[in-house]
Amino acid sequence: MIPQQIRMTEEQYRRIKTLAETDHVSTAHVVHDAIATWLAHCAASSPAARWERALSVMARFDSGLSDAAENHDAYLAEAYGSPDA
Image (cartoon, rainbow, N blue to C red; front, side, top):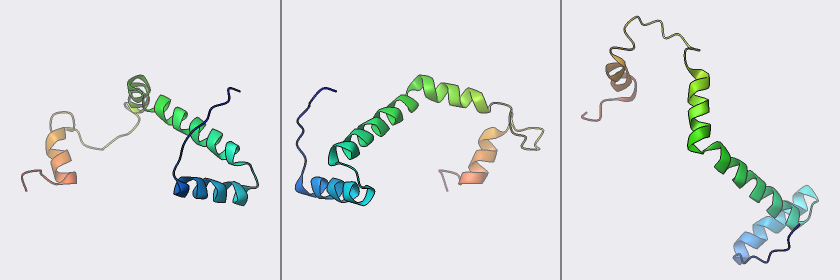
């Protein structure tokens, strides 16, 4: 591991310390986990990852509507409310 010094607010440190004490781990462990989670989130929200998730659900669901492709805008407006309303 590469040592790295970071600065945080007193509130951030207090919260990290509380989490560490609750989980019986070090504050460094909490920080390492937070960084790993953030990096995984960033990787999962990359354009390529979003594209793969979108492709993975294509044609997996059936709306029961025979004209969904032609009238999807109207169905979305009905479901979520028209922005003009």
